[in-house]
Length: 379
Ligand code: UDP
Ligand code: MN
View 1 (tube, rainbow, N blue to C red):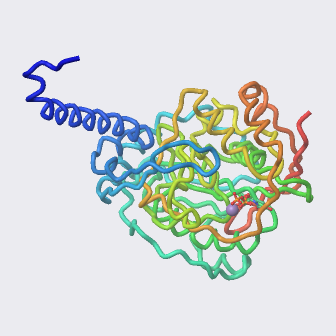
View 2: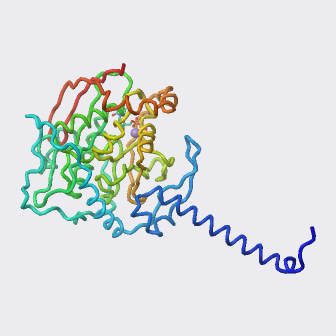
């Protein structure tokens, strides 16, 4: 075909315009895609989304964008304000039976002022401590705690009632280090919180997800917690602006871990440390009880979250940073993909509504509450 004389002389200009238009379109799509990875308020800050770059998942080959933002402390504080307002509306079914073994909790009365939306004593990046005294000696370091590792600020009314749920078996040195690092951070964040160590009895395959469900079920019997942080024992936060609260959407907190070169391994990841409100957790029916041995249970929760119309929110990677303590690798569950693929069929029937276990012990130690449980294999 013969080109028109006009087009022939201007062909290179037309091509340049086309390339520019394509670049602009790609840029626009990228921004929309990246905005979904973060909490809405972070995403509207263009400087934060500019800091993301796509990487490839090891395990699933998905293309996604890791939060690697360059956000200023004041941006985080602004968001902290907004998020705390969000969570005040998410309380449901408060007031489970307060048994004799429950802890005192927040005794401040209504005339005590609410804590400021931005905790004033935050320091930002913190040095992680890896040398902890034995568990028994740890208590001297935290005189302000009430039995069971429960704390609330004295001079103001906490905005958040948070249960930290740690699945646990046979990692005592990790536990001491976690407590040593977590208590000061949570106290600076002015939370009304309690740390629950949910220990699996026996030596059958470990079931991390089921222990989370047990922690949730037992915690709400003791106190009107509104927010639940599901926390591996071996992850230590590196920045106290990473608030242990629950925003409008479930939050994945361990975004950037040292052993993963501080990059998100894949877009839908929800393992490590995560936060959900009581209402969100109940809506998705908690975790599945079917995942015995390593792997799959966190991805199943990720699927539950999406299935119920939520999305995973995250702080930027320069704040949601963690160090992981070293440990031997658990044996992976060969059935994890099978259960993951058929998970949707069980969201309604497999979860907190089908949880079976025997509570063998409940102890209020000074720095944590211990729940020792025997898990029942689901029928
Ligand atoms: N866990 C534990 N004892 C075990 C296995 C697992 O306490 O024998 C808990 C602990 O909180 C740990 C979490 O389950 O951080 C996840 O297991 P693991 O650290 O083995 O998983 P990975 O880091 O290899 O994904
Ligand atoms: Mn680990």
